[in-house]
Structure formats: C-alpha cells, structure tokens
Length: 164
Image (cartoon, rainbow, N blue to C red; front, top):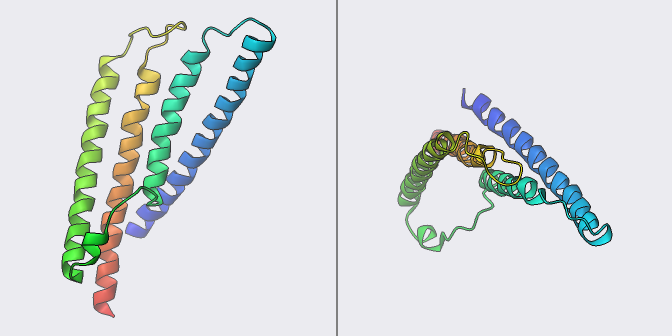
C-alpha cells in the first residue's frame, strides 16, 4: 500500500520539478524582456514586478519541497550519530513527526492567509495577492505528504531489518 503512496510522491515531485523549471524559465524570458525594454527601448514595463515577484515566490517555495524530497536541506546529525541505534531511530521518528506537524500547521495557516486576502487588489495589475500566497500552503502540504511517506518508509525499513 505504501509503495503506491511512495510512487505517487515520486511522481508528484517530478511534476513539481517540471513546474518549477517552467516558472524559472518564464522568469528568465520575462526578465530579459523587461531589461530590454528598460535599457534598449527606454520604456520600462511598469508591471514587471507584479509578474516576477509571484513567480519568484512560487519557485522558492516549490524548490523547498523538491529539496525536502531529496533530503537536500542542511542537517546537523553528528550528535545523533553518536547515540545507540535504537535512540537514533526514536529521534528520527520524533523529528519526522515534528516535520509532519509543523508542515501541516504551516499549510493550514497559509490557507487562512490566502482566504483572508481574496479580493484584495495588489500592484499595478490589481490582481489579488492570493495568486502568490497560495504557493505557501501548497508547498507545505506537499512537504507534509513527503514527510508522511518518509515516516512510513522508515517503519517499513525498520521492519525489514528486524525480519532479516
């Protein structure tokens, strides 16, 4: 059963990575146009910040979830590695539960912010900031899913080691 969930999380991570790359590429193209119009044509695109800022937020937050899936965030585990194996496993589970709880909390609080800012005009385009605030709960919900997968894969790995 959890193999299906792990496969889903891997598929989701690939889709998030493609979306992040697409947004980053669009940012590159749009930034180049903005620079061209400002310095070559002498007429700045006055709404470029309204496009680039939300894109930067999306790339940053989705990048956090991608890095979490690959365990690419910095972690200091030298103290944990000195402890007995059973205590290491306990602390790992405790950390995973903490990450699950915190990411679920952040996703929930992010949704409250998104709902509170609906209909508020922002920037020159007068779009609601909901379009970039929604990246926060989405990213942390994805991290929550990845943390759940890590948690249960850890249990399955521990059970496989006990059986052998």
